[in-house]
Length: 443
Picture (cartoon, rainbow, N blue to C red):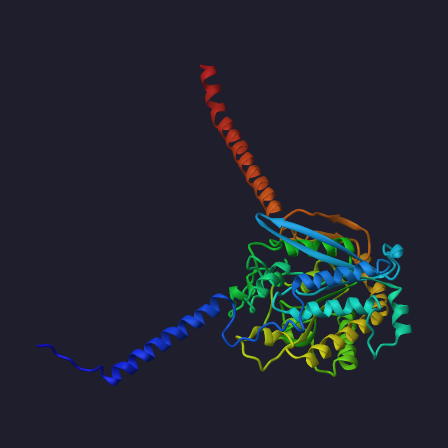
């Protein structure tokens, strides 16, 4: 005789709730593993190029305008990790590009992988420079006269390996292809961590310049010697000047000139929406090992900036694409057009502003013979540039990897200490034995 009883309704409810939670956890974890959330905004392919399409369009643009544009591909490798960076050079007359009297400008886009809008701005800027596109609020005659005095190098996608990770679905990734934040891998104040440090966001790497991408950019800054540097990001709207690693700006006339330029750009082209000031003093946190601080303090670029061109502060922190990139065509066009105009205005103002700095830089370098000397610690950490002035002849440029320098230096110091120890031990032993030998001989 069997016993039968139907399932308790409460038990059925508990089972369904358990299955629902189990499915929800799996769905959430699956989204985390793939770098996105179930409700995350996907990349809008009607607005944004794939990295292949972007570089192909830039290369096609270069081929259509060989009289103004040229492109080189620079590769570097560290152990089994390799990176390649495309560098586009704009010069209105290619035969005159090596004229050192021209104003030299270096622009980097796409250093953080998830900030796709910055690379689209690079493409639009190149289209304007090549005169395939025009901006309505720019005086063409004045602008093109200014371009005759410029050489501009543009890095449209600095972090190509990280960009590939983002396009594979990890929309919140900002680091490079092996998990290092390229804007924490430079040598100024490298490796310091704030209380809210997150290795998923700010991993500085094993040493300064450990990453091939950063090595390439440093070599580019050494060979090109820019007067103006701009590192282009998204996440907010801001015009930053040094410093990122401390809550202050440089002293004196250079700081006033940089701030004045940024305030004019903000007022004329950006409706005064942007924060203006030092990155460390304006953004709410300090950043250590950044490119802009290195460019200003070590590479001695007279004017070094970080531009933050867009940010949706109302977006969910888990919806990285919407947070860092416009998702509708109206906002997209507004951002690339306004910031293209801002860059063009910066080009026009740049010549006059740099000339205002010339005499001050030369006088300061002449007044102090030791101004450009650096400590051995700085030297080993990547401060590999030493110049008589910001525009003068290089005294020394040592282009060796940081790890190799440290290894050779430590080996030299260890060998020296061991040799000194052996020498002192031998002298001590000889001095101890000599009186005894004399005493034996006298007997």
